Length: 406
Image 1: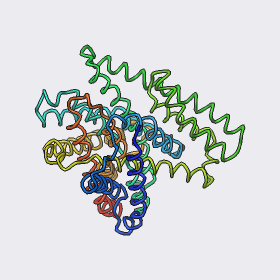
Image 2 (image 1 turned 60 degrees about the horizontal axis):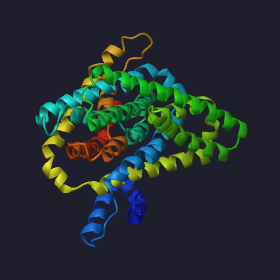
Image 3 (image 1 turned 180 degrees about the vertical axis):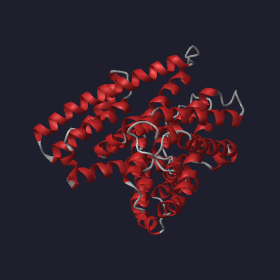
Image 4 (image 1 turned 30 degrees about the vertical axis):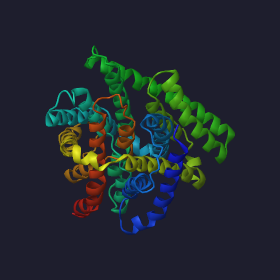
């Protein structure tokens, strides 16, 4: 577990960041940037000036992130999503979230492996792990910008739905690849990988739907806001723990399926009440804030000095992969029956709006130190997220103004 020093540092930095949030809004700077900077500056002052151990330990991160933070983020997004809009655009979202996400992982991995060109220090498995964690999109800040720009609702639901499902897919793929890398399963081939992926995915899906169905019945039976909040929190965590540790399928997929099931079985009226909706939004905000703070605390300048070329290659690979999966496939998607075409301008917004954030950082923080290339992978992840925060997110309003107003 984290030490008392670690908790005190995180609590203090959360307080400082919250006080700075109005200033960030006034300057139109994403709050996530403030959190990363607060984490970095706070840890540097703590260690450099006061010579105090922050108490942050790498071996704590995986448990905290997978068992505490990710269930909140996944469940909140799943239960809040507009089910009707999701169903209307389910085919393109599903294609973006699974086959195109896997394609993005492969394209990114190839770019990284060929670009870094160091088979011993950065083997194929490291490139694939990096590609998987970089394929998880996080459009939270983009969605708010789209709303302000009065962008079409379909564009927002495509980004939101893609993120919801591809985050879960990326986490599943990442976990399988980490297991292969750390257990030296040399006999594992592509067929076995796909079979294992399908098993944990479908198993997690069925488990989550079942738990969500049971939870919805209990919520309707009790029929009050407090019970809804308690049961929804219990169902989020129980679906993850039961599926992950008891059934040995994907806990993240189970949380996603549980949230969507609750959202579709007419429990939305409970979320319409400010108490339940605001509480889940608050929990998600705290979870996101902790991820960005932890990223800031663990960032070092040496990371960017030592790994600057790998970071630049990572940024180029991610942008190229996004261009390939959007521009290269959406013209063909529109040929499918019942699929509404996505204009070239909207495709451009989807390309530049495919930002990376909390899930990418969470997976990077959970990397096992036994993985030989963990430092390079984490450096690339941090570099891509910083590029997202300081370049993509800040320039996106200009892109939106140009494309939506034309």
